Amino acid sequence: MSNTRRRVGVLALQGDFREHLAALRACEVEGVPIRLATDLEAVDALILPGGESTTMAHLMEPALKQSIQQRAAAGMPVLGTCAGMILMAREVQDGRPDQETLKLIDIGVRRNAYGRQIDSFEADVTSAAIGGPAPAVFIRAPQLTGRAADVEELARHGDQTVAVKQGNRLALAFHPELTPDRRWHQYFLSLNGERR
Amino acid sequence: MNDRKGTWKVKAGLAEMLKGGVIMDVVTAEQARIAEDAGAVAVMALERVPADIRREGGVARMSDPGLITAIIEAVTIPVMAKCRIGHFVEAQILESLGVDYIDESEVLTPADEEHHINKHVFKVPFVCGCRDLGEALRRITEGAAMIRTKGEAGTGNVVEAVRHMRAVTSAIRKLHGAGPEELVMEAKRIGAPADLLEETARLGRLPVVNFAAGGIATPADAALMMQLGCDGIFVGSGIFKAENPSARAKAIVAATTYFDRPDILADASKSLGKAMRGLEIGAIPQEELLAGRGW
Image 1: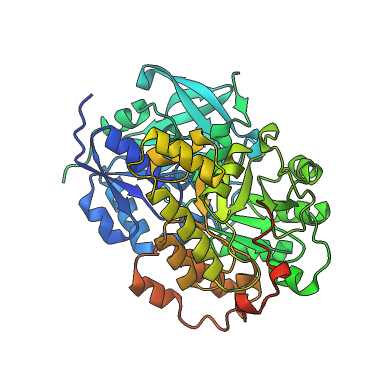
Image 2: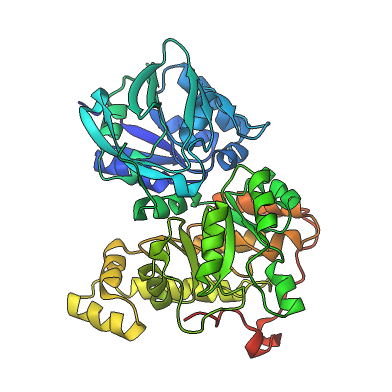
């Protein structure tokens, strides 16, 4: 796999963006924290980290939201983990009635679907995309409620789809960034980008 | 399925997800909704905010489970609750309610003057207060998966929070370049486990997430604590004892994200109404200071 991305943005409004920036460093790619729309101009791809999706949606200025949507529509690769997956989803259940998402991938999700924190867990998740099992951390994780026909399932855990891809947009219900295994980040970095 | 619940990674991991966020004290379901609307990453459910505990006196205990359940049902964000230092049965009750994080807190009246709770035996994670590095590492070795500096709760005065955060960060800075035998001596001197002190020295920070707490009342206070190196903010009395809680809550959330942008902080600090009145630490009788509880 070749790392063609030069600079990868990580949404840094709230959450575990530091861990994603460290994962990018481990992949020898420059990570750039993104808080304002102007920050996005400097990057070729974007990661939406774990955290509280309601807080991140609240803090995202309209101009940043719009830029992310425009760049993603033009083909910018996007990875979302946990809260990031919720932000990418077209529909959210058991969220707040006014919970606005970026609608970057045609999936529905249910927030906190595994239960409360005592039901959070670690497991090994197998995917052909990364060539076998990898450790995954599920923290108050969302579950998929539905997906469009062109949304590809990359991994299952039990009876749940936990990793999906549509075009070059990748959404994971878990946190690869909390483990030392970098294969999910490598896989994301191998996805083709937009022509700029 | 090989699901492993209640592991250290899962406990410390939730704290990682709260970073860069604000955790707000709430005493009703309605306040919890205001906090969530304002962008809180979690709420702390309790019967009285620290300012009222301080004023009314008496023994402060775990909150009514009915109130905690009502708050859990009102919001989608994590809900924390406090138990007394050493009161492991209050902690068992909070765990059974489905609370997402337990704060073993000096704000409540300690139940045990020698022992903190053995937090390793719980599936639910714990956050504990500290005034310095030794205290932080003692709590982590007992199983705390998140630390907050104590500050002086219920005062609306940030000076103690600053003192405790500076104590932790400067003690960590001093570890830089220390050899193994020096670390062993330092561990002994500050009463910390040597392995955790070594890990702290290697990381250049605490091995778990560290929030600031106790006296934060304005957006500038929150940004100050973030610039001093904390990972996020607890606001107790500072929001719902202020004139306009909703506006102040939103402003403190913005200030925690844009802590290094004075232009955005200036904008967030405008027209918030009166902050809570606040107390001079020197005016509080020594025996009424909360930070001295725990060891």
